[in-house]
Each structure stands twice: as C-alpha cells, then as structure tokens.
Length: 159
Image (cartoon, rainbow, N blue to C red):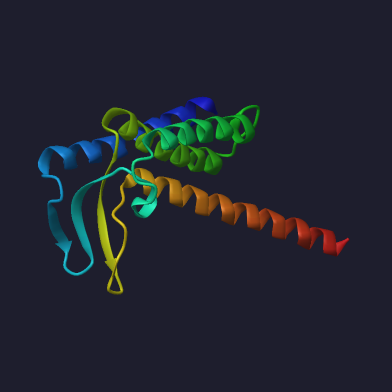
C-alpha cells in the first residue's frame, strides 16, 4: 500500500514540477499566451501568497503550515490504515499538491502559477497543477465523507 502511495505521489509531483519548470524555461514572467480564446491562457506569474494571492509574503508561515499538514495527513489518515485504491490516489493527489507548492516556496520563495481561466466573463485566479491536485482531493474526500455519513444515517434509520 505504501509503495503505491509513494509511486502515485511521485508521479503527480513530477507532473507538477515538470510543468512549472517548462513554464519557467519557455515563458518570461507575466507573459501570457491564449490557448482557447476568451477561456484559457497560459500566464506565468509568481505567487508569494496563497489562493488569490492572499497573505502575500508569508513564505515561512506557508512552509510551516504545509509541513504540519503533511504530518497530520500521515498521522491521522494514512499511518496504520489499510487504504483502498481510490484513497491511495486521493491522498497521493493531496500530498503531491502540498509538496509541489512547498518545494516552490522553499526553492524560490514563491509558487509558480500558470493556468489562467476566464469563466463566464470572470477571470479566475491563476493557479498550477499542485493547486488543482489539492482542490480535487479535498472535494473527493468531502464527497466520500458525506456519502459515508449519509449511508450510516440511512442504515441507522432502517433499524
């Protein structure tokens, strides 16, 4: 189980770091290329904050939070647990996302962001694959937790 978790985490982490490396190599800072008109661009930015550039300049705070989060995930959700295959993928996404942005903060002092969407006329925050991995993992975990709670409540009401 831990071997699968490690392998998936490394694969996702490599995807994140490779994509950031390619953007850093081929783009100038703040350069933007439209891929799908009025919907999707690649825009190279440095983010020294969190989502939507909140808490700008809090590098060490985010490094500490990421390390604490990784420890909490391991201690409370992975260690001594028999994870199902879907849980292995979900936790791999979450861990690799946290680690991807942590690596950026440690190496550069900022996170490399480049995925830039305009949805229904709203220019969404620019983000990266690590951010996507974290959001997708948390959404799936919440859905699974709500599903389990709903199933438990349904079962109790049948008794």
